[in-house]
Length: 79
Image (tube, rainbow, N blue to C red):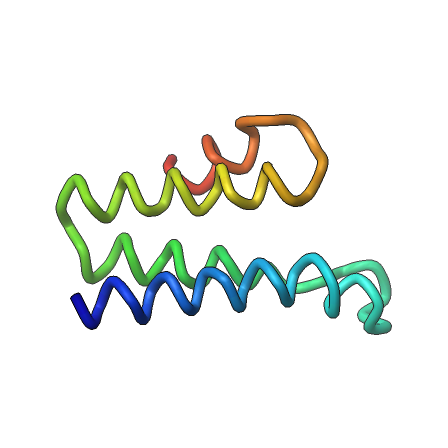
């Protein structure tokens, strides 16, 4: 239960960072993908269906708040 809470909190902070703070900072057009780091963690340390489902839901959440094509990030993070 503690791991789930930590991953959910990290996902919420990552979505918040990626949608509000990172586009404003002067990175020269290249902003880091914070949610990809969390997705790689899920792939390396959670080898179950839950890890794959969490990666898909993380991408779907990113699709929902970014305003882009629905399913693109969900596919990319779960692949």
